[in-house]
Image (cartoon, rainbow, N blue to C red; front, side, top):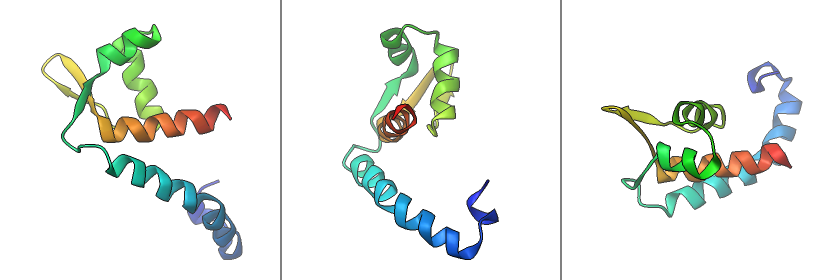
Length: 91
């Protein structure tokens, strides 16, 4: 069910519950240099999976990896948000 399909009263309940977390994620991400980027291959090697699989996982968690030439990269700001999302999905 999407936010837009919820009845108006339920939307306020969802906002009350989710808004503090969303704000905290963006405040954390804002403290990171917006031009700083990470090579996705390094993240993938650290976690023991392939680069393309890591790109897919980052996208699934709300990240925005991008390709320049043959390599994939993600801005550190976006990666912070991905890590927060991964923590929530496991909890």
